[in-house]
Amino acid sequence: MNLYKIIGISTLSFLLACGSAESSKEKQTQDMNKVEKQISPINDPHSYAKPHEAVVKHLDWKAEVDFERKIILATATYTIENIKGVDTIYLDSRNLLIKEVGRDDHEGSLGYETHNKSDFLGTQIAIPITQATKEISIKYETTQGADALQFLDPVQTAGKKHPFLFTQSQAILARTWLPCQDGPGVRFTYEAEVKVPKGMLALMSASNPTAINDNGIYNFKMDQAVPSYLMALAVGNIAYQQIGEVTGVYAEPELIDAAAYEFAEMQNMVDTAEALYGEYRWGKYDVIVLPPSFPFGGMENPRLTFATPTIIAGDRSLTALIAHELAHSWSGNLVTNATWADIWLNEGFTVYFENRIMEEIYGKDFANMLAILSYQDLKEEIEWLKSEGREADTRLKVDLEGRDPDDGLTGIPYDKGYYLLRLIEETVGRERWDAFLKQYFNEYAFEVMTTKRFLAYLNAELLDEKPEWKEAIRVEEWVYETGLPDNCPKVSSTKFQAVEKQLTAWKGGQFARELETENWMTPEWLHFVRLLPDTMEFAQMQELDKAYGFTTIGNSEIQAAWFEKVIPNNYEASDAASKKFLIEVGRRKFLVPIYKAILKSAAGKERAEAIYQEARPNYHAVSRETLDKLLGYQQ
Ligand code: BES
Ligand code: ZN
Image 1 (spheres, rainbow, N blue to C red):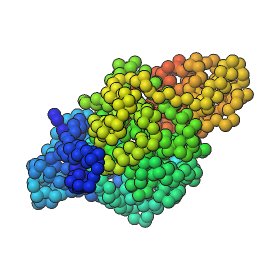
Image 2: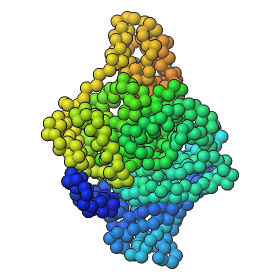
Image 3: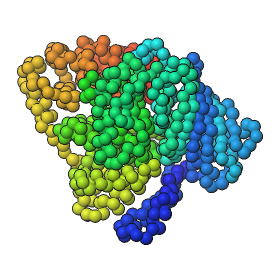
Image 4: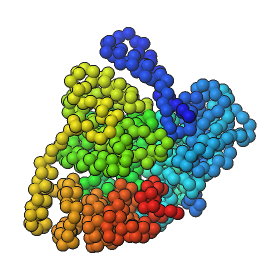
């Protein structure tokens, strides 16, 4: 079945294109856009909606969060546009309990159909409409099958007194808590009224309150159209602290000071990002630090990034993640991947942008270290995908047809995407490239981008100018072919060379405590731990641990890298700490390699399964889904 999406029709650029005073180059571009911005149907294999026929433009969401039953009860009213004058509008849903459907031009409740299509895509809701229909409404409840939601018991929070709720909608989980046209190609504005138990605060990816009120009813407004994967809600005993002019941090009161200290550079990051690629368009930029079961490092929900507490290292050393989520305010939230197969347009651009922010704030040496770590990740990911028979997933443009987009999510769009953009920068020069990017974000703001459309734009606006640029970059090879092209930029770092020298000295018999590590920052430590031999004696690991305290270090990245190294070497001295980590932390990026390391150790499957049994109830569905497969877990 073919489903189509509309690329937003920009009336303004139509009108502009009709003006007469433009240069011929401008004219050419606008002509291209004129063609491109007309209906370019996009096949989104992960949505049952047909937004090119009838589309949701605005959502009015009235909801109540029931912590006793761990559900949300809601009524969603949608303002729609019946583009083609059709008799049905289609929405996505999954595991929702639909109570009643209504329509503004119809008395009483309305008949509707559901078509249950697949486990991960869920159920298509088909609602009859007429040419006169302006609004439809759905009264519904979420169920225990709402994979976007994680309801936490008080023990899973820092305060231990109040429950907590957060959502994670990307990629296709919004439909588990809100019937919607759940593809990244459909944007809508929204407003909401959310009722929560007294004494708790509710926050969304919208204009937000900053303090708990007396009645537990909160109102939200998002005037800029966003795709459904950016719908977000968090509820808990949450405090706020302002950081800069448009920035601030939310966290449980127990964590708020540590969070505010850690993210002190946030305003600087926003200012830096604006100086690079243009105005920050979303008003405020706040971060909420969630409880540790949050399955990702961060999620770029507009106006309110969701973040894991594992980046609170106490020394501000893991804040590249904030730069990353902030960068999505341009690459992703403003110019949005048209389908999940184009996700490199979101993530690759964001890693690139993140690195540029880090370079501005912490200097080129620091940014280059991050780039090399990204290269190491990339090499490893490609090897791993090949060994799994998934070489096709090493393409930037992936084929996700018939698969849950989450299963297709790898490090490739991030790191290979980053290196392609770095190659373009190195080839055409930073000045030209930055001007191009700035123009790209402006020109396609609030629109969707396909890989094809981006390549056409890149050629027309930049690469067509010099054939030698095209030859040097070979962009099609990067995007459509597997593996890593041989023109991948090589990054070198004197700081990493110094680390390698110390490591050689240690291998040659020098004591760990005598190594020159005084000024090392997190990337240097990560490089050191990653380069440790795959096979080590107990005494060697113990010596390193005594000198540097890796097993109980407060820096989650270093700690996880250490576990990955020593667990397969049966370093039992880290068992208690690794178990504690796996039980408390739900961040999938850490869990997967640590469980894999346990599987390689002598205690092997038995230990992995025993820990998983205990830890699993703490994990979000996204992490459970992946780990159930890794560990062959059956409910
Ligand atoms: N948008 C992603 C998270 C995501 C991607 C969720 C795809 C679901 C599907 C977010 O911006 C991200 O990339 N997070 C990374 C952080 C990073 C690379 C600094 C993470 O969670 O580790
Ligand atoms: Zn990202």
